[in-house]
Image (cartoon, rainbow, N blue to C red; front, side, top):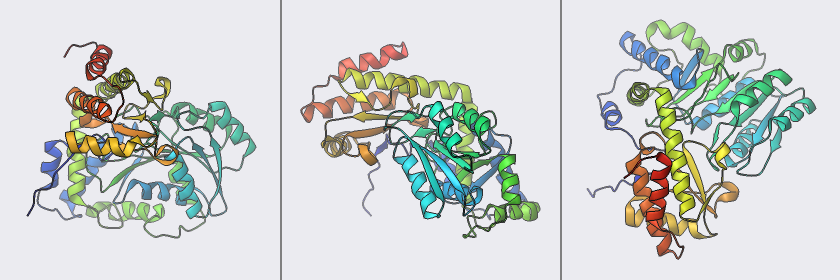
Length: 392
């Protein structure tokens, strides 16, 4: 059997995985029921609350995070209801697409890629649409590297409507400050394979008591059995005593890996971890600018886990290929309107550390020069270390 080459994952998911997580996933399979397993499952749910900043219900959905987004819309917006989506990038556009597939009416409040929708614009949109059932937004917009002001949005939603508030925190969960309870978030979707540095296969979701009441009291039936949160709630109530608080099978090995990833995250300390991501992201952006390039997101609203870099049109494909070929570093192409003019770099979890970023900066400067763009790695690294206040 030929050896499979594994690139260094400097992409916005999946991210690099600690050895302990890989060890956990390689353990002998466990049954997804029984008292022993039930105790482990409840432990993971309690641990998963902390990066959410939630004291409410935590679901571990054995599906991609997009399915969890679809689940939220299907359960919280009636078939004849309406949701308002804040759109400032490709991932916000995808929430709109999911809602349309479910047959829901959608209104949007939009701005250019790389910018944020102003809270005043959200307020006006809510006043114009008093019948909105759900407001949805990204926390860290993966296509642009913009950090949306979710805290402020939550306050605006609460003060100007009766709508629920849904947040896609897939690329921020475990790497950026997130406070579901304090920010009045009713349905929040995380991710195991990004800043948490776990493995994909399950999706953590935080559900507020208010959203639970809406689900319990709703009169319509969700078309898909798997997506129906009433089905999940019934399973929690009925089968928790049997160590199986869910209606279907779950990947025990992935949940064990998630437990180990959470253990590592919580051992570091959330405040310390978030600060590390902020500092590394800021230093990386300085290095990018020192190479003569620009970022899509302004510093004021920059994500701590993703940087999206503007490059000459047509260069992304060549740049990514050369980085992979010469340095075994995998970067990601742009998304949506930025597909042909940007590359995306993930600095999340393990990769939000000096060794990973220094190697990436070095490779990026070299590759840019090979493609005819003037970039000096010495200047870039000096800017990186200067931002951190350290010397190599």
